[in-house]
Image (cartoon, rainbow, N blue to C red):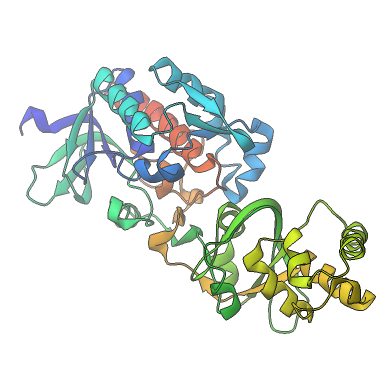
Length: 426
């Protein structure tokens, strides 16, 4: 066997988790090869944060865990060893300055994801990782003393340990096509079915599609679900920004509200979104504002009065739902009509007909079952020497830097753990 094809550790997948894992393991003295299927690593990283790369978030540790949902407890060990604060120190120490923006989001000062990728590539080079691109892994086999990695038209790679960091199934054009889950399944692991975790909503409401391009800030959004004739159940509620699109709804609030929506739809539940255009005002105060505006400009048409409360393109739709003629004079607005307008302004309901496809999801839900992975090391409970990190695991968090934090954190722990095992005397 060619000695150049034998390594202590082989990392499969050159995303943020894989690059972090490879570099960390190599820093500890392991001979590491990183296998990336694309022509260069970090292809998906370049489109994160709309090309700006939201590295992490300032949210405190005791909030980060519950905010991450079902995988929060599993992440405790990873985050304890490499927290959001450690991630910032890591990038700063490699020469990448960062900045904090609204909502605690941390970005590179350059506002360019390429600077983050350049920093990680620098980390790989300085730590001595052997990087091989255009290398699509097709099979992992166990062998005496480790593993054999088989790839089409490539030599076999022999490694004592493997770190599987091949990502999820969202944005397949970046190489994230679910192949990591398939490799784990071939190794004997249970795969929680993959689904779009952070994804826009579709709506069949024709009036909504006419609003395509209208963006809203400082609004409240609540996601409700129900089965058959049950009462509506609140699933999510938050304030922030959203966007009407040609297919339905998108934007930060909608994306975060979509977490778990695929499972709800799979359970046969009906979904609906409620928009509160004025969340800072309760019903009484909002009604008083409408009454005051009408009294101040009694000859103004309602289409113009409502434009003081809403983006102009929204006005006809809201007035129609409230049963108010756009040409009605403000001074003729009855108390009943005023209450109806306030009701719509505080609870503008939109039926959700479905989710956009996996290819448009920011993050993949599902993946390698957490029950089969040791959280303190990220080693497989079924296959000794096999480690997992990043999106290939059944982990998904909200927007705002959570998912990249999990990628860097689990990558760090997987690299640390695999190096410790690979460097043990035989």
